[in-house]
Each structure stands twice: as structure tokens, then as C-alpha cells.
Length: 81
Image 1 (cartoon, rainbow, N blue to C red):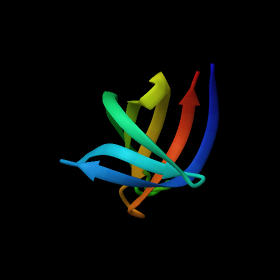
Image 2: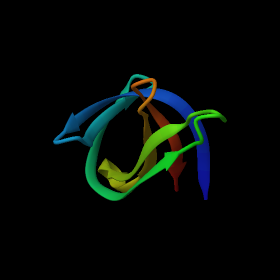
Image 3: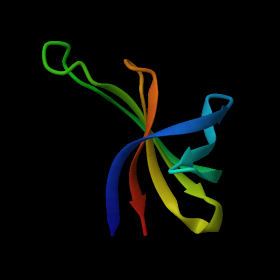
Image 4: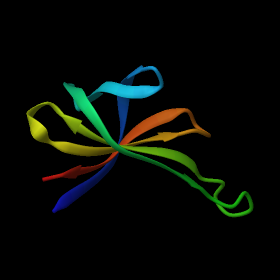
């Protein structure tokens, strides 16, 4: 199961990959990148350009983060349990 949040987070990157992030005042260390994919929308629609990262964090939790490349912001999209 998963819970969708879609909240802005602050991400620390190492070599272009998420190494940790802060969400709701809590720092989370990224242990491994499980997957990476990109979604691009049509420019005449919403112009979406997002790079997604599925990461494993300390404690074994799995999170989906995305980088909104147009707005240059990071978001936590989903937490898997």
C-alpha cells in the first residue's frame, strides 16, 4: 500500500541523485536509489517535466520523490509501506 502526499521537500543531492531530504521538519537519509524515470507533458497541455526517483531510506521505507524541472522544486509524491 502507499499514501500520496505531493508535498514540497528540501533535497540534498550527491552527483545529481537524492542523498537525503527534509520533510515536515524531519531529515531522512537515502540509502539506495531503486528506480528513476521521467515524465514530460505536452507543451500545449500543462508542460509537465518531472524526474522521479524511487528511493529506499533509513529504516527500509520506500519513497517516491520528483524534481519539477520547470519550477526547480522537489516534491515527495508517495510513501510506500
